[in-house]
Image 1: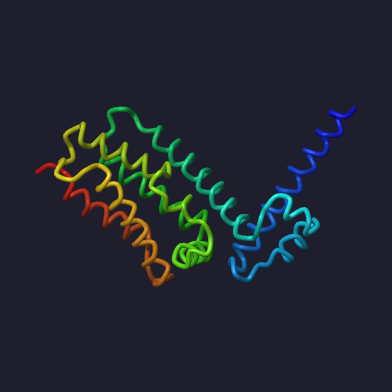
Image 2 (image 1 turned 90 degrees about the horizontal axis):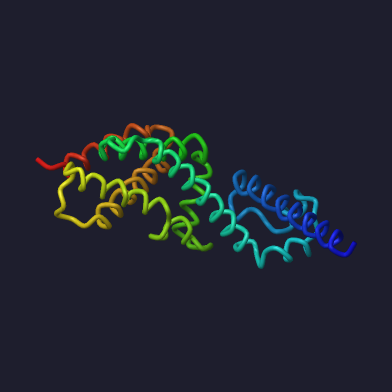
Length: 207
């Protein structure tokens, strides 16, 4: 009987945490991080303020947890996409496809308004942004694999290290996405990213 009560309590705790997660996510997407309080989150979730602090130390810790989970789900999706290519696919083809996939996620799944909020958090560092920008992120590892594949296939030159090329690929996506944010809606993110990466590939490919 005691174990049954414990399981019920655990199930209730999971349900409460999920309500807080979902409510915070909706509010942050609508109003931004700074304009959402713990009070508004618990009110929308229909839980007590005490319940919030059982699961999270602060609003910022909740934001960090949301970011970590979201990035992990995105990277898992990117990895599945990457694994769909046949072993003999050329690295340049894979690279253009994965950056196209990333841009589709940025524009269609995350959206312009949420990207503005994310860039604000990255610039002000009001929350832990390591899950997004850390070099141990799975996305970096995937780009590493693609670049290494291109070198192994003798499609890419080896004057720069794999890590250097990887970091510049990520910086390119991030920089062009920032340009999209400040020029929206008069800026086609996907076409600009693909043009830029074709330029990068011209430099990477062996002549």
